[in-house]
Length: 171
Image 1 (cartoon, rainbow, N blue to C red):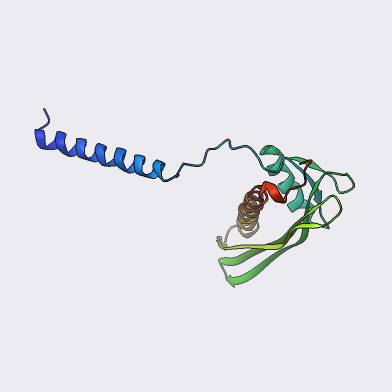
Image 2 (spheres, one colour):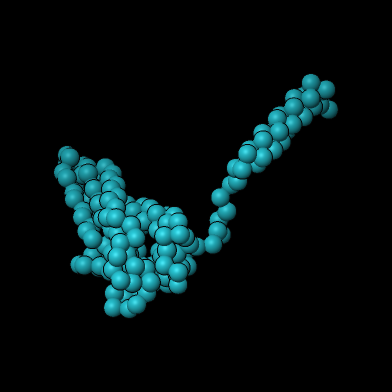
């Protein structure tokens, strides 16, 4: 059987949590809902020679509910991949530094910019066992995929954060 002190302590904690929740909600704080409606639902994807990155970006955007069109179509919004760069720097016998950068912009159907060129970067140190065959290649490939997904999710978040007032009327 619990003592009255333990019961009082749990009641006080519960009351504090309830009071804090009410205070946060009264000032307009809400947890972000997982199924918020998308601001941008259709995009024209314009790429140069970044096929692998563009393909992964397409997969993620489609999975998240955005319809993508190829460069020659008349979608109202365009996501233009201006530059994609990967660099690998040798650190020592068992590690390399992997660095990725993407530059992109958004434009409307008349190719007028809605968003100026944005630059996103990410990097990581990749450790591997140099005594194992293909250890370096496998570790770098896994890290590259992780970093690419990080960049793609950041692009998606930035695209979806464009205020509706800046979007074409037909979006």
